[in-house]
Length: 265
Image: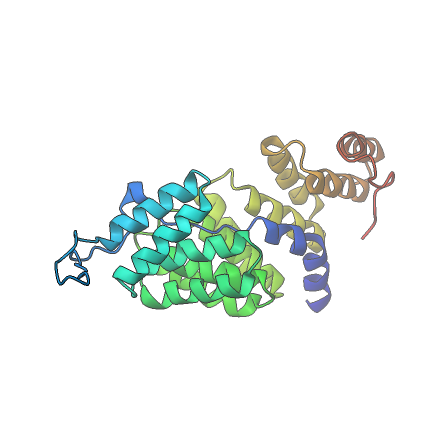
């Protein structure tokens, strides 16, 4: 089992982590904490206009979606001044920190968001994703369980897919398979789960099943170099050298520096 897990991680680990899904709050779905309007008192003692923290977060999301990241950060920080317990503002600041390569700061914001809103699956998914991407895959699994326990979670297939990828990285191949199959039951076109299942079946020696998953994967992402490389390896294992070479030809057309021969495992 340890050998199988090691092989599986080599096949799927690094590239799969690139597909982990962070989910940002969506103003259109009303995914914000509803609070009473707050008032700020100026130096003159007069009350200023009401500062609704949820409106500030909605503005932060809008600015983030528009690519105005400085403005998004300003709105998110203003929201936290109005309500320091607002998890959604931390979620936006986490995404912004990820963009600038400040992973430690992002992790702090993800954790704060998940702690402030323990029943909100989006924040649990995001913190679990951050843990997994930062070498703490086994620890991340409990957070995906929390995400999936939220009956209002908007994209359950993404949480299942993330849980599968991180279970695989943690060496828990059976759990990875269960999570990926759950994701595909909800979304048969989930590329992350198709890729994971293809790699897992290949590692287990289930080459026909691996072929089927690769074909579905390539139907959705025909230029995916990882899928093409794995497809060539599968066909070599099945004894079809012509099919293996066709995959390699497609791979070389996309990535000229790719190997010219299928790699054995």
